[in-house]
Length: 349
Image (cartoon, rainbow, N blue to C red):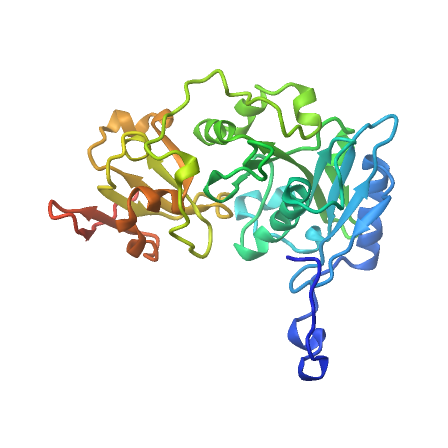
């Protein structure tokens, strides 16, 4: 959500109160509790990037400047936790419905400067703050979100995805703020990842990926750092990422899973289906799965022979799937010898 907005001809415009319902906000005592938690564990707030227009929740960005003891910026959302996220029922006892997100930036980061190379961490704090509302889902530890088409956040970095962890290098108590009414606001740290790290995490799990990092690599964003998965064999894609075109712009989550037969070997999609995303993956997973149709069971069971990609990426490889993408979960399509996709019986695993 942009921080600024212009109103032309105010006399012909509805008031903001008429255009938008009042955004969700913390009650005063909850506000004070979260603000006190931020100051106690992350440092006193030196500046606030105030949000001008707030159609759903009011999300400010609190800025804690570097200090001699902590030589980096801490930026935190403030207001995301006013909304209770739609957490799966089996996790209800853990009080994960409310969250705020921080990111740590080096002391020479040019906050307030124009250019995406300086603004992308703030942009993504705001995007993540609203993802649970837009997708009627939730965000928590270990969740990952990719930039569209896995493109880098800016021209000066290879970082292109994000993972949420507990705050790194802070007191254990920084993880959770208890509100006066008994609810809890969980604090997560936004860790930017390279494409290889995103693929590794999705093929394995968050903890296995985190074990590859040093504490220093997790502590502060380094836009120039090497991938911690650089020692692993890298896939040679049939279409280089730099040649991908913007051919599909759909609504909702844009992530999908496809096999190397398509992305590496360049074989057209032969069979695809859409399933309900796993709990916790609703923010990124469209549910679409794409195969060439000739993969063996052993091939499909090998996590290193598939990956998570944007739907637009798959559409670059095979534009014939575009008309299928509005199909509901629980549907499947198979390409016939004539090259035409026809509906198939969907069998859930």
